[in-house]
Image (cartoon, rainbow, N blue to C red; front, side):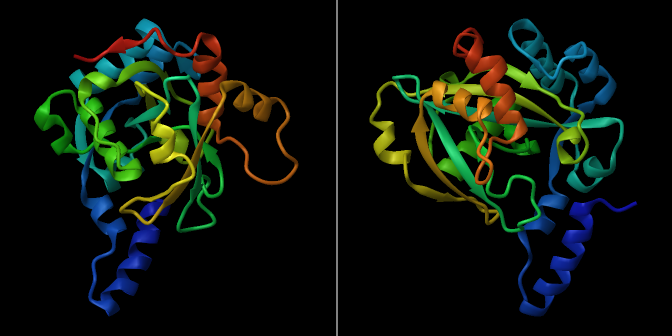
Length: 251
């Protein structure tokens, strides 16, 4: 059975063929992405949706040491594999969190018009060329999405998320990192600015207090933007448990 991504790719391929251009979604389907055995990863979560500390380190190490790169189209259809998705929570010196509102190309995308507190994406084969593939994949995505150019020492592992709730999230494990700026001046660069990814997604953001995010969860608006599930778990289980400052620094 074809995945939703494959069906969309075939439709776009026909459209772009007429225009003489190659759609980005076709390139995404053909790229090799990092995956690992679902059974091994699920065991590391011990029935939880979110883990921190040593358990999160074990999840990250499982991808780095035992993972493999497969074509994205294959990964989308595989029931025995989970895809690595390193994501980064951006904070300023005062501890406020970058809150992003996503606008996807398709209104049917579950992230469209939702609030997220992370940026990230799949790990490609070339991300392993310079060291830890998860770290370098996260750094590449930060640059593509937010135009941030950071070094590997700046990211801190704070958790991992796997929620088998159906849909695309059931095929991914979020490996959660944090970057904390050395000043509040990052507000000037990021807050209120709109960024465009190569995939056509746009993001607009602002820095907010962790308390504001907790209030949004406690009293969600009847209409309008709400936190997507991973972001809610990060607020509840990581930021709400001491600010996520006890993870491992990558040197």
